[in-house]
Length: 500
Image 1 (cartoon, one colour):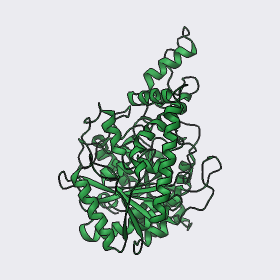
Image 2: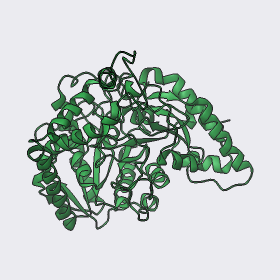
Image 3: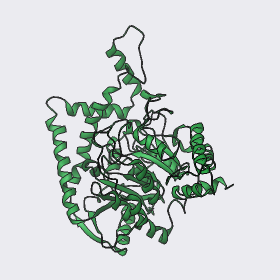
Image 4: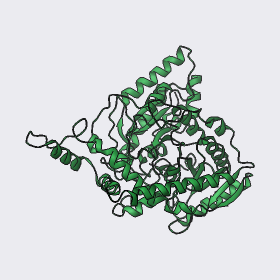
C-alpha cells in the first residue's frame, strides 16, 4: 500500500497510469485525498461540501471496471474538486451564496455529467466568491479561503477554493469558471495552472449564470498536461447550450505532450505593464520572455490601445448581465425565502429574501447593472461598453495577424493579504487588469507558474493568450515553458511546496 503523502504529490496523469496498471486502486487514491482534506481543510477552507460516500462509491466503480478488464479513460479514478457553481444532483450547489444555502439541484450540469462519464472522482464542491463576483474569494457567504502559500493571503477569486485545493494537495484536479479571470488569477497567485477555454468550448448548461456572454468553465491543475487531459474530458459541443461551439475540440493533449515554441511568434503587449505592477512580477515576466526567446520563439512588440479601456467596459457589461440573470432569485421557485408569514405580498417577500440572501458585492453589481441598463442611460453606458468590446476584439484580431500567441503577466501583483482590499472595490477590480480583455473577445488563455516574486516569495503567473478555437497553442507553449522552468529551477509547487 502506497503512503498517502506520496499519493497526493502525484500528478493526475501519474495517478491515472498507476490505477490503470493496478499499482494503485482508485479507492486508495480517494482515501488519501480525503485524509488530506481532513488534515488541512479546516485551515485552508477550500471546500464547502465534501461528498465522502459519493467519492468512494465512484472510486469503487472504477476499480470494478479495471478488475473486469474494461479499458479505463485517461482520468479514470483521479479525484477532482468542483467549483460550487455547477449543478450536482447529489450535492448542494450554493454558488457561495446564502440565497441558495442547502439547495440540491434536480439535475447535473453537462460538465458534471462529462466528469462522471470520464470516471473522474468528484470529492466535493469548492468555495468561491458569491455568484463568482470577486477577485479574492472573500465575498463568499461562507467565509474566505486561505492561500496555501500563506494562509493570511487570498487564493485568488472567484475560484479560490479550487486553486487552494490544488496548491494544498487536497485534489490533483479542479474545475473553475472564468468571467473576467477567475480561473487564471487564482492559478497565478497559488502557483498552479488554469485555462480559460475559447468561449463556447465548454458547455455552460447547469453552470449558474453571472454574465452569460463572458462566463466560461475550464480546467485547473498543477501541470500543463493534467490541465490538457481535463480540458479534453469536459470540452465539446452541447445542444443544451445555445452558445456551445459545434466543432471538434482542439488537440490539446497532443499539444501538451509535444510542447515547442520553435519558430512561433510571441506577442508582448505594451499595455500589460506600467503603474500598479509589482516589480517582482515584471521581473519574472521579463525572464519568461527571455526564456521563450532562448527556446526559439520570435518576440514581437504589440500595441493594443483599447486594452486600457477593458476594465471599464467589463464593469458595465458584467454587472448589466448579472442584474438580468439574478432576477430569477425571487424567493418563489427555489432557495431562501424570508418573511413569508401570510401577511406580506410576493414583492415584499422577494425584497426581504434578496436583502438577506445576497451579499454586498452582489448587491453592488446588481445596482450598477440595473442603472446601466435603465432608460436614458442604456446607450451612454451599456451601449458604449459594447462598442469598446468590439474595439478590443479588433485589436486582438490585428495582433493575431502578427503573432501566434500573446504573453503577459497574469496578475499585476502576487497574492495580497485577506482584508487589504475589502473596502476598496476599485483596488480589488484591478486584480483582473490583464485577464479581462480575453473574456471580452472570447479568446482562450492560460496561466501557469513562472517562479516566485523575489520580494515576498509568492507565486507569479505567466499568461498565454491564443485566438478562439486555437486552445492547443496554449498547451504547446505552456508545456515548453513548464519543461524549461522545471529543468532550470524545479516546479514551484512540486519542488517548493508550501507547508500547512
